[in-house]
Image 1: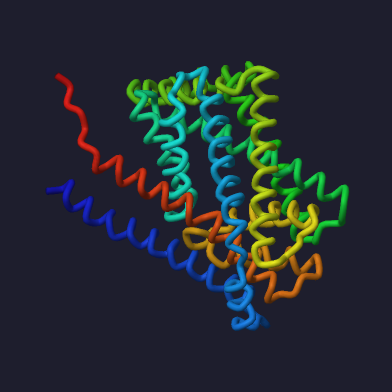
Image 2 (image 1 turned 90 degrees about the vertical axis):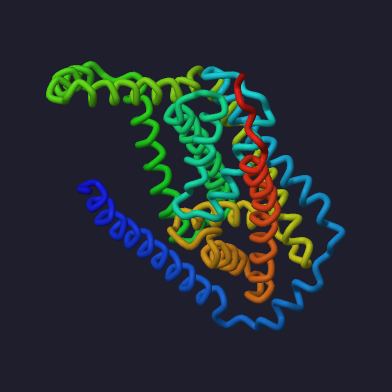
Length: 337
């Protein structure tokens, strides 16, 4: 009876927190939608969208496939020291995680793909999630590479430049934290030995297992050769994404120079860090519009390009992820004899 009462007391608070986050994201998205639509002729935007060149869709879908193949190969390669996993299973987890990231707040898809792969392969979710975190580190490193190249070509807008500095500092902090966690200095080991004696035995066991699994996952990134390969794979994915953006803009007649494509890539990656509604509606469009306007494109045309790029980037892969997710739950599970 006491447990039921406590659960009833916790559940409303839990729901209120999630409802508050939902309204916050909705408000942020609504704000950025209003900013993106300000001064825009919607009839002109629809006219640009209706004139889309469907003949460029095949190369766009080829780019999408290559992007997810590169993502899959990079994570499979990163996971290989932990366990060799079939390419198809890794691809399945990645595409479902991508779908969930566009449907759920706070990038919950990353945790979901770690859970799904860990459960299927009998690996601790914590160890798998550590490899997901490493994978994200290489994506940020690739983004910073693009940022440096853009800086060598043009001066970035103030907000973008400040964001790059913050991300660079955060990446250095994360890298230092990973090294310290995987190979802690002697003084950290000493304080940990002293501190854990104050904890109950069961808590010590849980913490020891957690640390062991995290180190197992982080250890997948050891070795200069492996780090180089992972970095090259991440940069290759960014290059293909740039080609995807270029061809997507071209479908409605926007001829974008390479530096504008790279700036768009940088802006959209920075924008998705803002806590908006699932799918980053409004935030994504605002980032693309402001970037293209910086390169003197008409705002109506820029918004048309933003909508096209967002739809191409999110909808096809999310639909495939939804099909995979439904198939996973609808497929009968084999019963061990």
